[in-house]
Image 1 (tube, rainbow, N blue to C red):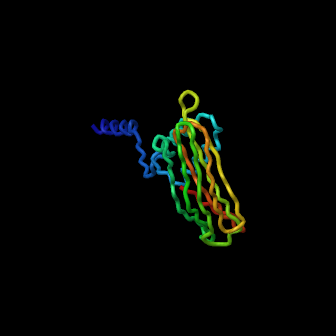
Image 2 (cartoon, one colour; image 1 turned 60 degrees about the vertical axis):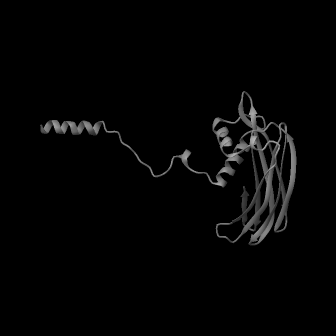
Amino acid sequence: MKNLLTAVSILSLLFAVPVFVSAEPLEAEKELSVEDINQKFDQIAEKYEVGDELSKEDAEFVKEYATPSENSVGAQKSQSFNKTGYTSGKKVGGNIKGNVTANHGAVTSSWGTNFLAKKVKGNITKVKASATHTAYGAVGSGGVGLVYKNSFSKTCNTTQCRLQESEKYSAVVAYSYTTAKGTFHYKSGSVSVTAP
């Protein structure tokens, strides 16, 4: 009987399936910050040329985080922001306040921005205000692709800079993403603030 119990114990150890439990969520379950989302859209815009079909992973990201155009056809969508950022030691900081807009029609679309990037704290030597718009639609055999991308920027050798620009373009847009960014330069580096 003792030998039978020993044999059963050994067999149960051999056939046991280890189960690992982790307190960390899986990559797909992690919530992305606004900065993470902006960074990913920047990577996608740099990776593709207009007319290129996106990879399945990039297309899913665009569908998840970009603004769908069917919600805004014929109506202008405006997103306001008022955001401040600092260096890690909080010795230098800047603020961006204003809005970005996107209007998607059946064939003609437009986008624009009107915002002020200004010093909040520190010895700022110059300020760069920039905005980027990327639009995605059907390309190839029904895939999602990049159909438009453009940026505006202005650099001011003062402690503030206003960017006010708009543009029309022709494309059938399914999704779009628009950001505004203020970059505040100081003697030993820079700090950036991005919205939305």
